[in-house]
Length: 311
Figure 1 (cartoon, one colour):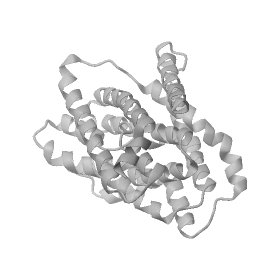
Figure 2 (cartoon, rainbow, N blue to C red; figure 1 turned 90 degrees about the horizontal axis):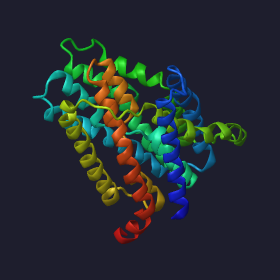
Figure 3 (cartoon, rainbow, N blue to C red; figure 1 turned 135 degrees about the vertical axis):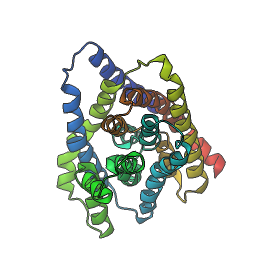
Figure 4 (cartoon, rainbow, N blue to C red; figure 1 turned 180 degrees about the horizontal axis):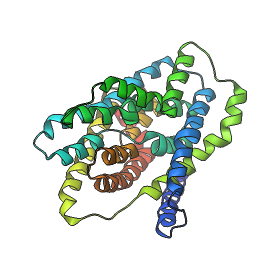
């Protein structure tokens, strides 16, 4: 338990370091963009490849891909009828941020540090499903739902955005290789190890750079509704995973932890692109990081005992 607490404390310190670096302008205006590109195009794909190459593939973990899809798409579909009466800008805000989990840049570093490689691979399988919407699917669907003139080829737009995402391409390739029994060569795993290890620091530091706690008081109601809905949905998904997912031990606990991952940072980007209130989306994402740290820490510390009670 002490090891878990110390590890999580170190992660919190990295996030705080990012916040401080932003406040004192230690990192220039283009620094955050550079770090995000390094994470999404280099260290995160390296961490995914390293995870798949470190353990034997378990075919039963394929079920986690549709579970990841359900945990992302479910809240989005639920929000469609519930936001029908909202103003257009508000509806876009809710649709783009109610679903989607920040697994690669937030939850994955936690799992890498606290759980064995098999749990890391399970996390990647779950994130492969989550990435279907977070790599562009939710943006394209929101365009179709809210635009006066929906795009002529929405499916092509979704496919293009997904296939230009390096982490998503890595998931597709590695899952295909694993299904056919092809292992990542040990030499590549060893070569990528230092890069994969850098993913945790860069990802969490990047989150710190993005956190902004300022908000117009008139928008507090919208913020409360969005965060309240996220917390309620995470609680429901966590309970459903523990009650119904046919897995055991650390892998089951890790998937329950993933349901408490914060809002995906791409939600804020998509909100900007849709000309909605991206500032409020960024604040909601920042606060969801705080909620995620608390919930994931509690599950990491007390989850094993909870599993014994359930089992």
